[in-house]
Length: 395
Ligand SMILES: Cc1cc2nc3c(=O)[nH]c(=O)nc-3n(C[C@H](O)[C@H](O)[C@H](O)COP(=O)(O)OP(=O)(O)OC[C@H]3O[C@@H](n4cnc5c(N)ncnc54)[C@H](O)[C@@H]3O)c2cc1C
Image (cartoon, rainbow, N blue to C red; front, side, top):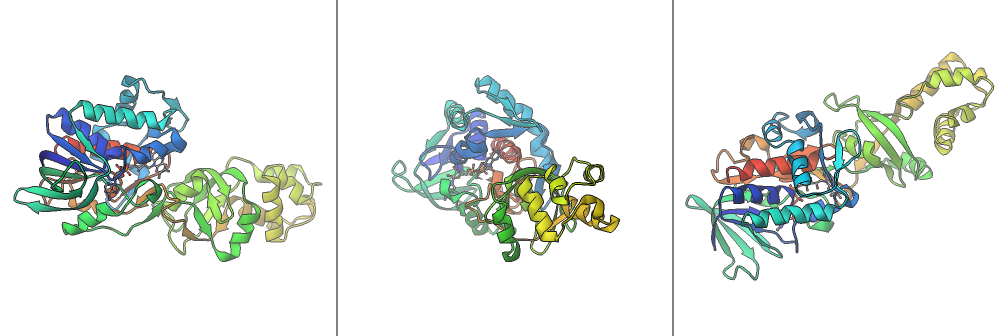
């Protein structure tokens, strides 16, 4: 089989690349080992697809080259994808903080698939991609699929959109990295991102006792200056910390570096304590914090007695423990629980405008396969759409 452009992966970035290539009149073949397009889109946002974040900017991404995402994000914006949702008459739900959701992720994936097919792109599912290599000015892709009996696709452009390692349960694999290494490209260190933080052995029991408690918090990573201030809900689990704030923190946390958690980001703790001198400290704290957490903090720190009986020094210690609680994570959870892969194919080897490899003309990488990971809140899909459009405009 011979086509202009082969796209490996019918996920978020692959489908966008297919639409763009199809609109340019290229003959396009999309290969995927899944049985339909966008398996990850279909589970995204709890099945509702947080398809973009209206405020997405380079600061929301972790990447070895922080400028790399700028060009693609500027040329395909959150407003562009929102316009697509409107044109397809898909419901848009504004969840605040710039987070735009659909109401049914399957419909988003199906609409994208239809658009791509409408431009003439051909999809072959249940296709086991064996590898790809350079041949002349083009590429040969080896694949096992009943629709490609000789198992070979020749093409002049190859887009690798096979994503990262997160959520193998919907078909994530290491193919992007294998192909990159096969072409002699560098892959940075890979680790699970947007994943729960696992407590150290010493604090695991403490977290487990608080399991189920969710509260708004602010997280600071004092030893990671590039980490932003993280705000959001935190959830105690049997294994440690989860919830949006912990998942975001996992992008920046590294072994041996403590997190500081502010359990009362918007409250005047000292004001409340000094206005309730006769209350037992545990009861005063329970007015502000979930009771189980207030009691657990008192037990952990050995606090007891009435507020009025506490010295100024002790009150400051209470404030410090509640507003800058040191949490020593042992690790992040594994890829089965992670929403993205941190690290990936090194962006230094690619044009930020076209996603084309600077040393191998015709070879493009998009989406999560690259060393780009976004924060929680629609940023990762926005990157997938934008990088897919960038590649599809040239591949
Ligand atoms: C549970 C979950 C929820 C998420 N929710 C959101 C959200 O609401 N908002 C947001 O912005 N981001 C979300 N993300 C992240 C987002 O889905 C991804 O970052 C995005 O889909 C990456 O796009 P991609 O095109 O790079 O890869 P993918 O969308 O993962 O597509 C890769 C494609 O390649 C195919 N493939 C992989 N390996 C092979 C192989 N060996 N052979 C053939 N085909 C292969 C896969 O089947 C898949 O179709 C979520 C992720 C998860 C896991």
